[in-house]
Length: 544
Image: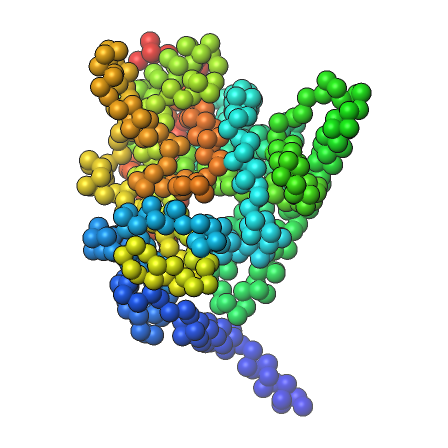
């Protein structure tokens, strides 16, 4: 008995456990490679080949995807051919289509090519948002699409008041000494708090415990996405179940604040609808709680009017703020690296337009900040968030056939080559350089023309270079009917933050350009420190 016990304990050594884990990982990888769905015939594949040895090499090539996408774009996409981006470390294979097929893909009906299914798969929809329906039927996106734009006039004045408070909490008020700040860490504190304002309203957006719970929920989803990608499929349900415990914890924390407000809001709306005399002059708060209830009410969606569902949908909306963090991270780094001349021109524009708008940030004024708009869009181009974007999953059981005759079977993932397009020298002059005013220059030239000269210019074409205008050459917000519905708010939010920072803070020159690390198919932000201090007075042109 004793000898048997010693033998068992002898097996449970760290090297033996490590060998068992590695053996399982390799076996599971080979199994899933052998049982994976077949790729479309006639579509060339990048990577190390389609055999089982090549497949295993592709699986572990976590830093090769950029090289493959760029090569595939130049070799195939620019010759109107699609190519296969092979599966890597749990990421599925993608059919990367050329620009000539994008209109066809974006026009495919949802019952043939789904935009929500790729998100569901990527974000581990069975577990990440606690209820699969949140991503299976992204009704919260529909609510934002129907309500956000028409409420921007009331949201922007509130943001004007929120931004100084939040920025000062992070950037400080010291006008004498320079301080060092990590860019990603700083804006990860700023953006979620600001994004909470138009969604949950005041005073909840100021509650540090709620903000902490909401940010924790977002980080839980990001963490789960990373962990599940590197986990063999056979144990992904177990891994997901364990990881989702943190999601549930943070949701429970957040719902302690949101549920009482939602329940009271529903009661108030119902009393108003019933003609209660106390509610004849009551004004409905314009936030995500009201929008969801009213939209679901008008569309006969009673399940979306339930407090628990609204609370969970709220977390889905707040999760989206992490992409805004990435955008402002890339924007501030590129702007500071561009130098003092670029900073001065951005400051001059902000100062001038604020003066014209009576010192207030307004929707009309923000729409005229063409330089800042261009600087942000150019940062998205220069530092794309992903190698490929705008994925569609073929959900028609019989598959679908492209205009060139290639058949894509059920389950195929199609995507667009965003990073190579963004760096294509045939589309952009000096594509490798950050030109902050690449898109604003034509608009400023137009505004300098006489009335008769303006009649000869295609103004619509110039306006199509705006930050929020999507196209085959600007995919950061997606494109078509499934383009990001929150991009209009995000654009205004980014402009106000950057404008405020440039007018109220000085920055030391940033040595070295933005450094981009590509892991699998995504841009991973590296730590970057900036040195800043608050100005003693708001910047004016006389300061130069």
